[in-house]
Amino acid sequence: MKTESERKEIINTINELLEQAYDSTLDEILSYLQKIDDIEDGEVLIAVKEAKEDIQINETVTWDEYKNCETF
Image (cartoon, rainbow, N blue to C red; front, side, top):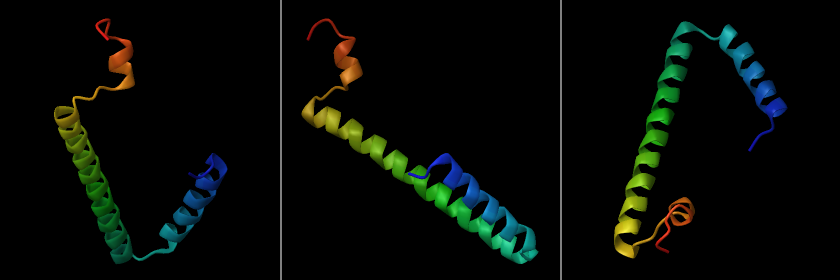
């Protein structure tokens, strides 16, 4: 994971390059970013589904659920 200053430096560099880019390039970049976002959303949904299946199969609970339940 990047530090806050590293992130700011990268974002500033990206912004400088974006300012110089052709409109068609900006359209392509936006399309790629949206695809990446969709892929990440899909990965999150898959992880949630797998976690739910694991709970059903193994009857597991989270630590927070365990701490908040008096029957354990």
